Length: 457
Ligand code: URP
Ligand code: ZN
Ligand code: ZN
Image (tube, rainbow, N blue to C red; front, side):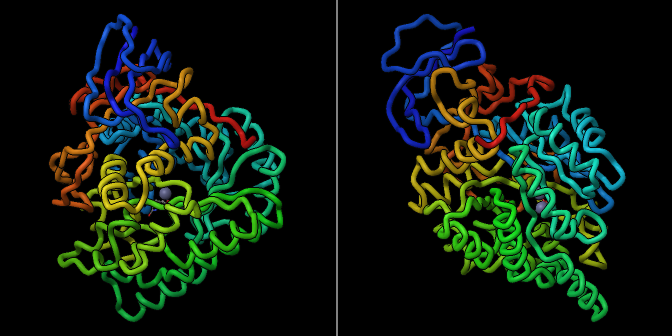
């Protein structure tokens, strides 16, 4: 099967030129100008960008959490991702206490197999680090699960003590894996939550007010310090606070391999959203919480100057029925919000169109850099001969209005309801197969494959 994408503006992390891209079966075969080659399908990309497919390295599909399960499974979630221009995800499998990593992996593979529309990999969340589990980390790395998420928050559920965190970090020094850290001081937050509840402070906004930016900064600093002692890289997930970014910047200025992602919600939403009436603030209950609007410029600077290397979504949607589990107690509101479909348009509109980041940097942050950090490059994350034909034809001039009614995520609200953005995904190829054609889904559940990722080089 040959597909020829003609006359588009091809954009990678480093290049921008008018050209044609020939896809042969699953791979990019030829890039040139005015290619005169027979193809089974020709896509006219005039006036459009031809981008490497987005890579979202932080999603939670079909994930039990706080008495509910995230509303998108691997079929609805990956379909929505494709609509939004994302062609690979790395989701989080969870090892519950008492479980082996192998059993956890099998459980998550079952959730994805036969359902995913695009390619998917897994990070493994470790909640208990016995000697046996430590040994299993090596086996997982060999099987292509080359990153592990650890929590410094949620005591009694996900949180690991510093000794276990340190042992896991040390283990990645020999097996080549990467530790991804949820960096918030869970002990401090727990005390603040109990005191708020005891004082009758039960509304959604207290979720944010009991998770101070300094608790994120402290944990970020500690995580980086533990990684420095262990002499390994570290990746901070869903960084929200400018104070935490300062810790990453300071470490990078000292030459440490500290990496971090942020998410669109921390760039476009803020603490003010928690003040929305009628329990509306619950839509934004996520951890870390939304921060002050005035600090967002610091995150944008971090993205522009490479102190932040990736934009992921932390897609973890719950319908309002589930959010209402915390109607009378903010600490019972399931944590998380939808975002898998809106990332590329939001960041293009609010980042590139405003001049905060360049078009090349947009590609780098949403595709190339996550691919490099998580062992997918150059198979994914660029447009080059031999790379997977994961390609997005993106219209930089098409305006869309974000709404739960018209988006495809399986959730009954959208945090950006009514927001108009300019820049939208028209057509998507995943390993050469059309998944979205001019805004219509033409893909197939089960066509996505498990991504066996490489270790750090
Ligand atoms: O609130 C969030 N972020 N929910 C998903 C779980 C996590 O910590 O990433
Ligand atoms: Zn987290
Ligand atoms: Zn998450």
